[in-house]
Image (cartoon, rainbow, N blue to C red):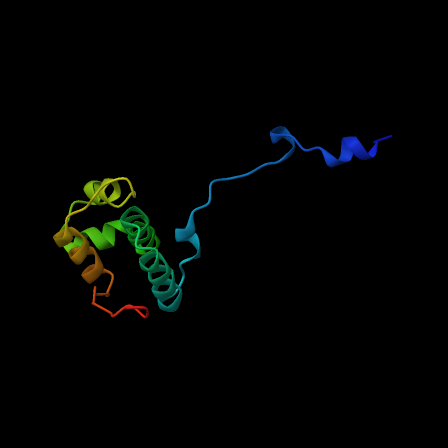
Length: 109
């Protein structure tokens, strides 16, 4: 019979986990817009780049590569979150996503 101590203790072997892939949940324009808005609100360039990459993956990296005129393999590397993509690359991807970067005043100045 299990004691309270035995049932309260979990090990890595007891739990099955799989990697989180947010692109699987970006299933509509509103969801994509809110996801990107939240990423941009962090002011974290790596997170923003990763979020744009997740959106591109959700829509289809090949389609985004074709629409943006960029190489698909380079897009995967550039949008993985560890790189610092050039502004023209980000603008091309955003255009291919049907989005644009636009300045917006901060609420707190």
